[in-house]
Image (cartoon, rainbow, N blue to C red; front, side, top):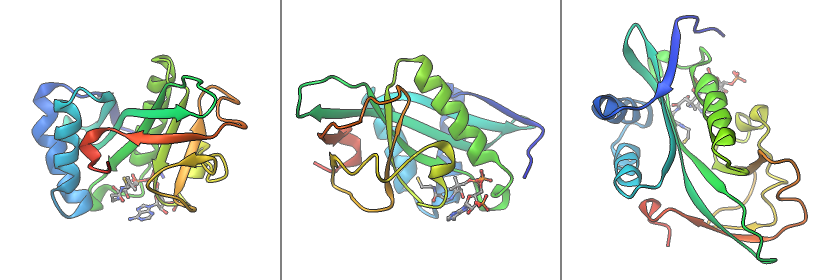
Length: 172
Ligand SMILES: CC(C)(COP(=O)(O)OP(=O)(O)OC[C@H]1O[C@@H](n2cnc3c(N)ncnc32)[C@H](O)[C@@H]1OP(=O)(O)O)[C@@H](O)C(=O)NCCC(=O)NCCS
């Protein structure tokens, strides 16, 4: 797996249309493209990164603000990873992994202490996500696909909390 000429950087307004296109191609519909627009409009984006090859957008990942209401009153800065999108003709070359790794590093640099994802149980553990870590979190989701990652080691340990996704997800 290699994508040697990959450039990763944060989105700019000039990327918005290409981000919509990449999300449509990856998901085969407009739901995720709209989700990205709504998260951005609401000011709930923490990190949004594009991957470029020869100047063309070939992937996108977004991390949004997530509320974590801890039963012990602790305040934990938390992000949701979603969506991540690589068009079918570019998949399995490491673009998704590069986007996620870079995004997690930026989240850490911005003080994010934990990240939640709902995704493929085979894919996300390689970045450190764990379904076990997410078990004490009350969310609209549960099971193997609902995973958590501690960017601040131990921050979720022994803690139960309720997860509140940004309004744009429409989960309230
Ligand atoms: C998930 C996705 C972002 C991965 O991007 P990518 O650039 O192909 O990923 P990488 O090259 O870093 O890694 C490839 C791995 O992704 C997994 N993968 C790729 N496409 C997949 C798919 N449609 N379903 C499940 N797993 C998939 C493969 O199992 C592969 O794992 P392996 O390394 O064990 O073979 C990309 O496949 C995609 O956009 N899929 C459609 C949209 C989606 O489901 N997004 C995630 C939910 S928000």
